Length: 315
Ligand code: TRP
Ligand code: ZN
Image 1 (cartoon, protein in one colour):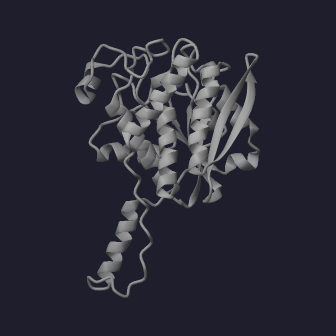
Image 2 (cartoon, protein in one colour):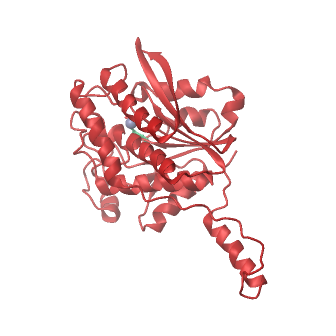
Image 3 (cartoon, protein in one colour):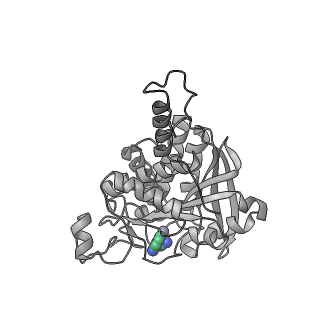
């Protein structure tokens, strides 16, 4: 099933038509359908504050936030406490992988049509080698801040919103696969789309959009076109993150990515800036993936694109 969402532009067109029919005055016209509420500009300082907390958690727990380690559970507790305080209904889903307990965190925003669920998610675990701030504190912090922005705005979309933080992605998308497999066929079919955010603040960034569900892809591209940033299709390993189990189950997917260990070309440096001949993230899966391993502009743009897509696709 494809997502089909009347955007703001078509709502504006309806207003314009009503204006024409009443000779330039909308007085007496039937009320126009409300335009989709505008997505907020997420404060990047808030996203960075979450990253600073995840860095502190890693530092206090042996330098990582990996599956089965104390730093993972502490990361989950941090995110969960923020969501609970904001009014989300949170669920911790436990699983076992490699003899260690793992956890997914699911947060439902009360309201909306629960037969049409729009999900946004990110993996919250790091590798054991380091704190995992770009991979994937960046996606986790931006999804968290989007959820908190939904609460701050009191946003009540037509569709139901669900946010997720996955465990054990670095062991082969274990948590997200466990979640998808645990859904009944009926509940699986209620998910209109899953948006994935894995590495969105790479220090030498590219702007990559997943080439999957056309409506989701178009929504992200519309955002980036609006801010004058060109994008490319994500090709650095299709299916290498938590959208893969959703896609395999027939759920429409999409997402954003700012690059891992592939090398930025000179053509890419010409359009995006940064350094040609260098990896998008030279600290990928290493101990130097710390809070200094983030490009603030990429983090800001991708977080705003995430919020934009969540608002648009759920309206
Ligand atoms: N999932 C990988 C990791 O966490 C990162 C990655 C590599 C990726 N290529 C990707 C994520 C393409 C999304 C899309 O280590
Ligand atoms: Zn990752």
